[in-house]
Image 1: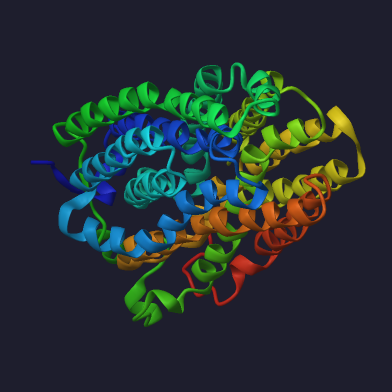
Image 2: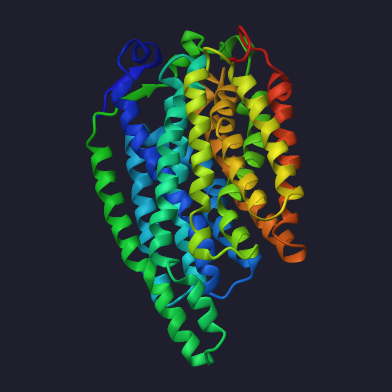
Length: 435
């Protein structure tokens, strides 16, 4: 049985062991999440899809965050953090296992169902782990801790598409050329063989997730007595402000909107770049590595955050600069051509890196006993990664994948608004929001 501790005593204790466990979970988030960047072009070939249909991969995966975020908060109230994380890992394992029959029957709806179940499990994990990292230490350095977790996520994100891409896309260019010359019967055989390439990787992933779920369940990961936040006045006293509902915190609600558009542009930067490279005539054998370049940009940003926040720059400043770079790189991606344009799409990873770590502490500061449900709403905002990339796919079919990148510019405008003024609206906290 895990130890129940309050926030104040936890901050006086060594938070390193819990952060190591959470770091391992963030690695899993990154690995499972960024596999989608390879699955999109892979399933587009194997299941014969257009752009819009292929981006249903992202939709099925991320819409589960909208469906499961609030139920995840309720689940954590009953299970606590540790058991909830273990249950989330089990759900991701089930979703991964569904890929086996999906590949065997080359059933795109079954692939999408497996992705939905994976996303549901990750929704539970995200709902538990993000506030956990935020609470384990001073609020003003929360972005620094989340940036450290982001490195774990980013390293996995670099490895995942490279590993899966080497398995399923290693001869994709030859297969595409071969399909043009085959009869319908011959084509079915080739596509079935291509679909079957994911079976062994996902069986391995399933086994690893089951082992990790057991390890987390049996770990010494402490529980946090979140109600102590209210009594201690961490970030504000809920009783003094008279707040009776989570919807009375504007900084949270606008934070949800900000994360909705942010997760959309983050997934566009990582999940569209391989297909965009293919559209430009770059062989898939080369383009399959492009998502890793985007993730390298994110890692560089996380390192900057770890070094500079809060010693040299505040979380709000980091958020403002990140959104500004997003606007700049997005415009350059649209107004340049060829590999130069691809480089600017990859650089969106650098712009994106400090947005998630900076929005979370701004949005949940002062929520007190509403922290878990507030975190659920923020995790629900990850559904932006379901809606906005799907809109990108629709624009790519009607115009082209290059001009579709115009979509990211207004999203970054929303983020820069939150960084400069949106987070302040309705603030009635002691000492204001964290810097």
